[in-house]
Image 1 (cartoon, helix red, strand yellow):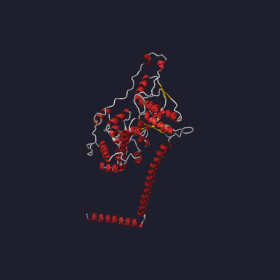
Image 2 (cartoon, rainbow, N blue to C red):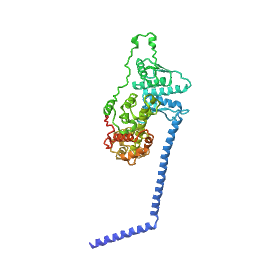
Image 3 (spheres, one colour):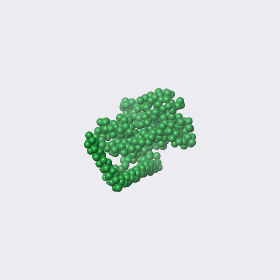
Image 4 (tube, rainbow, N blue to C red):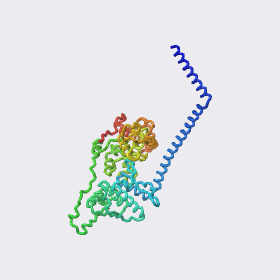
Length: 471
């Protein structure tokens, strides 16, 4: 036993001697110094790359702003007119933009038109539009071209059954725009049709009084070619029932009853402010909500488009227009603050722009939809690889980097409701100072918005209307 202990002692002494020798060699050598120098150099390089990335991001934001400003200032009158008409024709569901020219096209590159869905933000090529919407886009462009080509004279326009591919609501929107050309601009429009129900549509449109109209049907003359030719009355009978505008709930209802009758969906800021129903923004002014619904304006995205159109003056008075503008301003600022720390919801378009292709685009879009677009939950699912829809996908690092650079992932700390309120009061102090809204009204609107994003919020005030829209 003593022999084994002596042997073990010799082993330990030898091990200690070896460690001491290595320490002396390390102190005498420069490996540690070199390692520290390499770490310092890498840290410096990383700092430089970070600064470059921040500058590039700032530059991209700046360039994007310059491009937007240039586009708005340099758009010819023809395009602005076409965009205005297209918004009106589609009840402000879409906006018109000029897409990028195809560099692969032969000869001079030709720019193309695209429609932007104001609710989802999707950019749609003309081939992706329904036949009715595509017809309305082409009609808007052609009509704008005609209007701008002969500005020196009010020549008449001839339209031949341009409503044949439109549903009743959009047919009504186009007819209302034509009425504005007649009554508002003094244009003479000949509309040719073999559909008796379109006569009924135009009679109902022109029966709506507008400022300056001398009578209920001022500006409308129906020339019955069949009767002039002596056609039998039976041949002139309408073959289809005339399109009637949908029945709208009465503003005399309670807000909750009105919301149920109008089919208002619950407020969900995760889907974006533009996708929400106008009821949430304008309650308790149910008369204004009803007027806008009658014009086909249902979402806040449509309302934002309508609020900057020329046609708004034909339908809303000064007080109503001011109300719409101020509500949109407050709600947009609220959404910006609410987004801090939450990022943006992930959808198919975001994944496609990140380079996801093939079967993965379908499976990951389905995953994102299941998670309500939550970016953190989505990236966690990719890392865990438990969900079968993530199997085989190997580009999660590149995808995560893209989503973070584009603002879908936000690592900032979410402010509390009280912190958000303080920041919003500071941001909106200007409109209080100018008298566009008083401090008490602003406080009520902010409390209302907080209640919408968090129904359990204790900041609900007695003056804020309580509503329970349908699911």
